[in-house]
Image 1 (cartoon, rainbow, N blue to C red):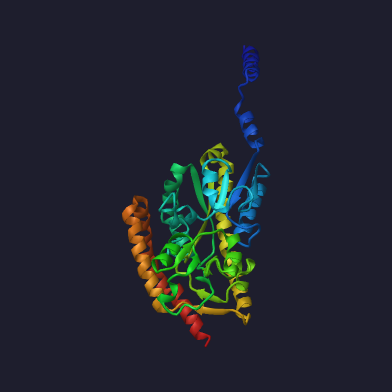
Image 2: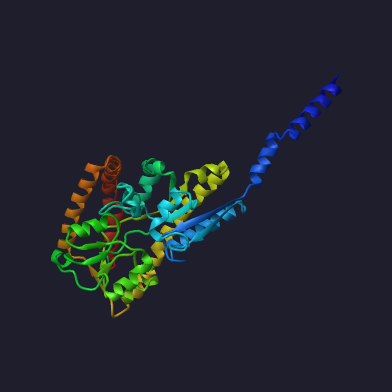
Amino acid sequence: MKRRKFVAGMTAAFGLAACGKETEPAKQEKIFKDKYSWNMVTSWPPNLPGLGTGANKLAEDVFKASDGRLSIKVFAGGELVPPLQVFDAVSQGTAQIGHDSSYYHRGKLPAAPYFTTVPFGMNVNETNAWLYFGGGIELWHELYEPFDLVPFPVGNTGVQMLGWFNKEISSIEDIKGLKIRMPGLGGEIMQRAGAVQVTMAGSEIFTSLQTGAIDAAEWVGPYNDVSLGLHKAAKYYYYPGFHEPGPNIECIINTEAWSSLPPDLQKILEIACQSSNLNMTSEYMWGNAVALEQLKKDPNIQLKQIPQAVFNELKKHSKNAIEDLVSGDRSSEKIQQSIESFMEKSSSNQEITELSYLDMRIRSEI
């Protein structure tokens, strides 16, 4: 009797296999044999330190961690799609994954700049704290969901420089009529102060600044600015960058492409993004320090702090710009409230920790 049941069971099993129905182990084996080949489009010049190389490293880490099951080919800005059209390309499925900054999408999503940075906003540590523990990533996913995109943070440059100028800025009057490359809300604030805001890809900045097509430009900071040669196109280098105090870099994944991955590859990609965030942020802390020393030794460059009176005027324009943004967009209002709630707590903490320590450390060296 037992033998007949065993034979019958084996026959049934072979019958199912013959009908094309896989057993669970066979399904698992198939899943782990499946391979995925994706294209990543970016907004960066080829191999740009930090941003461009960060995209390359993310692809390499995913390939190694997945044992080659998920390969990602990286395209610099303009190689597959224009640098500022990454959002559209990934949303429409032209590419499966993108690497850029959210504030490039402000025309489609007024709230998008919040997930890069907003003027006079959070620094890198506050940004990461809010994203990972303050509900920021959840708000980000909610914002991008209608565009069939899944976003993750993949790096941060830290407080940026205000930028390169071909003339000195002594008062707010010197801002008026200035043609400046500055994207996002920062550009709008400069425009409110009387400047002419210009948006262009990083690869176009040097020539535009050198030829006088623009009068000033912000890019990132010493590390990337030197790599683009911007120190050869203008002599006044102003700080600090009120417009980008803690700019987050994003990885965006097409929802259909994301859903096609098995859970383990999704987790590998998620962890690789988090690893990239730490790696890129650390690289900028190191690279900016080294590059700044190089620039300070150049007699043709004047490193200057923006006058406090100008800084104060820009902050007034920033306050008005944020008020206008949240009054006309429910998503922006919701995100702004979340950030303000956290910044109030964080500012109190940082005043007696980071700020106090750095201030006393600097003064103790005198």
